[in-house]
Image 1: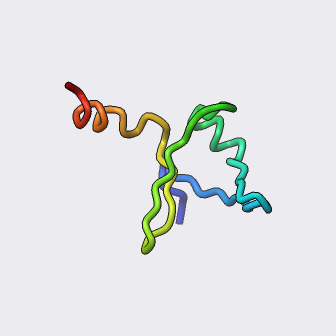
Image 2: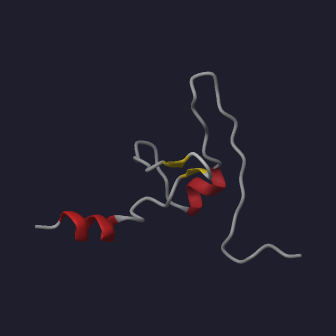
Length: 66
């Protein structure tokens, strides 16, 4: 079975301070640079998700636009 196009899997190890390192391939693919702020979503049943930065810009604009 081949890998679905556009789908990726990486692993990260949590350090003593609770920090993780985002793999270089993922940082490059999603243009994540030092100092960027990432959104971390949590669901007690399903775990954590870190969506692409700006993924919710349109939704937030609709919700908070005056």
